Amino acid sequence: MKKLWLSSFILITSITSYAQSTIENRLTSAFDRLENDRQMAHGSVSFTVADAEEGKIIFQKNGSIGLSPASSQKIFTAIASYSILGQDFHFKTILGYTGKVEDGVLNGNLILTGYGDPTLGSWRYDGYKPEDVEKKIFAALAKNDIRAVNGDIIIDDSKFSMQPTPGGWPWNDMGNYYGAPNWGFNWLENQYDITYHPASKLGDTVSIVRTNVALPNVIFLNNIKTGHSDEGDNSYIYLPPYGNVAVLTGSIPYGKNTTSSGSVPNPPLLFAKQLQTWMQKRNFYTIGSFLAANQLVMQHKKVPEIKTVLDTLFSPNMDQMMYYFLHKSINLYGESFAKYLGYQEAKEGATDAGVQVIRDFWEKKDIGNNDLKMMDGSGLSPQNYVTSTAEVKALLFAQKQNWFDAFYKALPDYNGTKMKSGTIHGCKAYAGYQTSKSGKKYVFSLIINNYDGGHDALVQKMYQLLNVLK
Image (cartoon, rainbow, N blue to C red):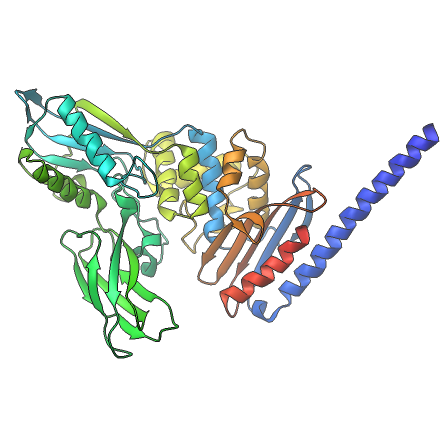
């Protein structure tokens, strides 16, 4: 019996070792093909694969080389947010006032104070759309018998830094929807749509048909040209935070209207104007101004604090927000999570403070600052540098947590694999989980920088390498 047991053990060990050796050989061969491909003539690639159950690295090439990860960096923000804030976390927006209410009149300021909620007025969730926000505000006013305001209406964005854009974000990203900066008070995901109509001739300037919201005090300088019908939307909007001149450049295809999305330059002010419209519609009497707190700060005036709370508006829960953060790769959400972490843990609602909280969290998990050089919470900055080994360690940590199922569900599915992608100029990355046909589970990270040629062709070659894990 002892000999039989020993023989069986040796056989199983041999089979396991052979399988391990086979996957390593196949990964080596596939990686070499990718690394020696002509698209990689001037590029850098980092690739790490671990056994998901044992946590052991089974393949690594340039795993300690820091590269720009683009949105694959979102996994660090997501996991830290789950761990520190909790699965039941909600952002909040507080409605309240200063002064007193007498005979239906508020003698004081009506204030809405934001704490970075990126979902307020978002079209993605039932119960959080603009009409839902309107109902909640006026229901709270009616409940407290407030029918008029003898004072200012202030949208308070001062709990977060007055610098809404992380350092390192490219100028040509900021005015577009994916580069929407984060504020203490966000509205409509800080996004608006602008529709263009092409000219009748190639090269002529297009016309602006409409914007879906009216941006306060913004002037559009339109230099967008009409391009060939097969070129797609190559338009860009240059409009910085607090700016009032939007420069439109690039081209849209000939033949049909094209709608592009930009970032709102002052969301708290936009909401102030929206609230004014709602009050006028309801014949809600006001004396005073509709202001954003940042306007008061610019005038070196003190921002009033709420003395009496009327209601608190909550965001969707962490699982719901995380789904869109990872699945749709919304950069605004990452910056909201980062700044709130800074606000809660370091008493400073600023990007630098929040990023430091995230880095400190990961340093305690054996991912040092040299492995994770973060500039923002979303990965949009090309100044971020991450190693593929660090991404694998983070994903291995996540799978041991009680919220892992929700995190895993939030990851997109590309090429039959659950993984977070990353894309900025000259960078493509994937990090995620794969289960092979035999049931073996792997965790991986693949990051490429400065590749040559087209994005789509490179993606297919990256898939060929990752297909080995299937």
